[in-house]
Image (cartoon, rainbow, N blue to C red; front, side, top):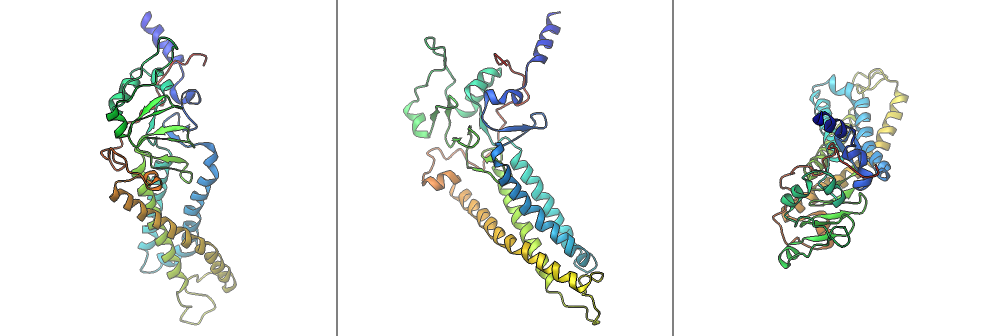
Length: 315
């Protein structure tokens, strides 16, 4: 019947994430469109971030876990492990969450009802077609909207609401854009800024736990009974312990330097939140006219509808 034919034809249509290269920017989708991340050229920056998280933590557990578990400080590796897990979770949430992409006009007309949804959420005027050119008209923004920060994006063919910026790396407009972070392989905006700040503080706490744990382990005295082995590694020859110390120094010095930078960045974002600014506004020396759109406000729904089926001519 007609209903079954309609369902069959709809099932053959691609989903948004499958035709994103026609309708969106450089972002990539994972897990069948359920996760979104940034462009491919951020791969090595992301590898550096993961290495900074995993390698020092692995050295800590490899060298120190036996000592702490056999002493009265057995809670220290457990606490460190929990902080490590929270760091990984917030890293993945920041990296694999839609940061608040404002759909391009081509996507808005491909997904049923998306034009009105975007207009209602952003307060921007809905799109209009030109009968002469058969393309979208460039809207004439009122003085009130222009003074609030509404702007026309020539790439996405949409009206950007206040604090929305077109990211050159991802090639998308992002709501309440803070910055593009290659180390998390994603933009940081309205929908993942909370995850990003939680990630920064988790990394800072993990760095403190690992560094203090390694330092406390390193300054422990030799076996008070005068044996050939140290109390820290009762089953390890002395010459192997010297290599362990060298390894901890090689790993520890870069970890301390990077940790100071991460803590500074976390404190910097606390200052931005108190001042009601984004990173981009701080760097440009500008303040948004409409400060009611806060980076710490509600995340709001994702507007890209990655798993919706769409009709794209020629695809």
